[in-house]
Image (cartoon, rainbow, N blue to C red):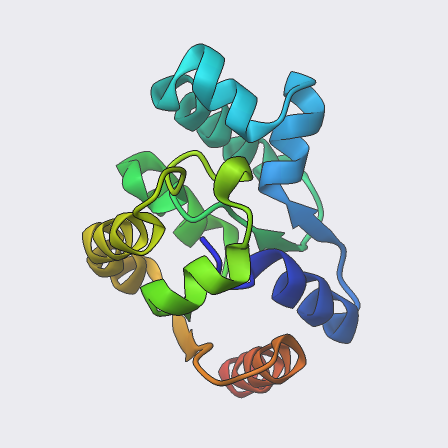
Length: 162
């Protein structure tokens, strides 16, 4: 949520010579609806079920960089699946930075409303332990550009592989 997962994922994938799978974009394409619409019409549980299905389907695909939605970690089965799929990178972001990066929260159902920073703070606090538990690599995005974050990830991955 506002950590730059899609942007950083695209840059890291390019650096690594791997395809990028943007899980949220895939869910939208398969559902024929925006995530905000899925949330509004079907609810968060229905979205999370779609998210779990899309993540599980990646096991049959070639290696790639996967940009997941911020809530992917709320389901235990997703955390286990992420670990099975490969190296998990947690992009750490503050609530203020997340809200500033997201801009128009209308596409982010869990941040909609006048208290975006409060909602982001609450979500990040609730999820942080889950992110840390599943992450092999943690990178702070604070004060860094997307290319800088991608470079840090590529460097950490190369250390892990050697």
